[in-house]
Length: 544
Image (cartoon, rainbow, N blue to C red):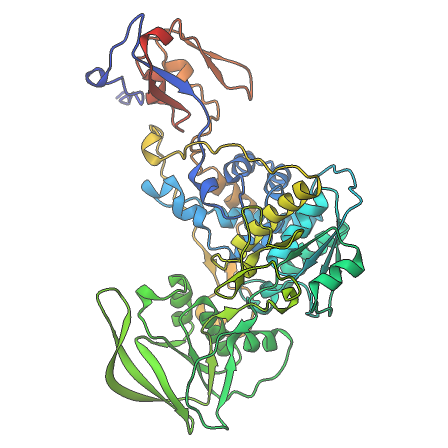
């Protein structure tokens, strides 16, 4: 019995045609669109480009392309909340490409092999000061070094990394990975001076002869709240708690540890307390659907035995007992008091209510303006003081590692153009390739590689990394799940579909050309283009 053949090529729907012939009212345009993953990346990565190389097995070149934009792939592959994946068009078919897992794989291989980024910059003779060795400051140093500038980072801590080290536990970001990515900057010539608090930036810049300065101090000052408590009650803020763990300090907080807050820092504090032998419970005034933490963080905390008391607010802490008021959400999702109270046993309380930044080092600059405790900057990341730039937690924005890294990259290029007395120009962005523009006649059953994690019982024994990475084979398969949205990969579908032979191949890597003298506007090429690089536009008769 012969197998039934299936024609995957869909013929043009002539009922939708605007007319074909010697003079067509529509014509195809061959152009690249912006992949939605690229558009969603706060670090400005060309994700589709390095995924294309990774799927071909060219791992080192994929890493080099990635490093053009993001100097810390092994870090971001672990701690970034990957908005690129939320934007991925593959969500419309099965599941998003696991971009962060491939990024982590590339970063880990690079660390193991000791790779360095390729760049060729002429030394500028300019010295740049960066205050803060967190993700934004480190990223700015990296890009400034690639641009040929001498860079010194000064930080008050005894180790570089900022909130990467003192705010993210080792079970999410192993310290050998963090140290390896920072060490690469030292190999590139970046100078990092630790245990050096900058109290007066104006004086520091003048004495050091720095041409410009970038301020990227993290939000290390915890927000306070008025909770009546006995003098002997043990209360500590979450940032200080996580930093003490990183520094190896012993904190006698007792067995029953309460954490007040619903953000990622609260989850980190609770999960860390569990690993140190405590029985942690989180108290939060809203529910899971309205918490600022990512839901997977809450799920993993619950798996590990962390208790979460939703819709509760603390009114008093005394005699190892918390008095909490039950809340209810109104129609807008805001918590409202009910007048009902309950008591919870607790030996100590960790406050995870958000953080503020310390801006006192800028007090000598009268030109600098502030808004809600952070620094106002213009579109070039410059403050009101000439030559003083700021980014990361110091400026109004969401506070994530990837956004901070993107700020460092942008600030580096803005500093470079300011030093050269030129304007930073960016080409206009192409339209984003939507799922509707793809013609996936080759849909395949290719489920995402599942996360390989330690069991909850294994996790709470120590601070070993919870999520494991991909193998080489898994990483390549995952990269091959990419649809290359908006970017031609020369599959020849348009070339083979054109009935008028109006499309010609220009050679490997050069794409296709359209002969509009032959084209009748039938749309066959567009219907067959899987990635949306062929689109139809209306045109006037005199332009044909």
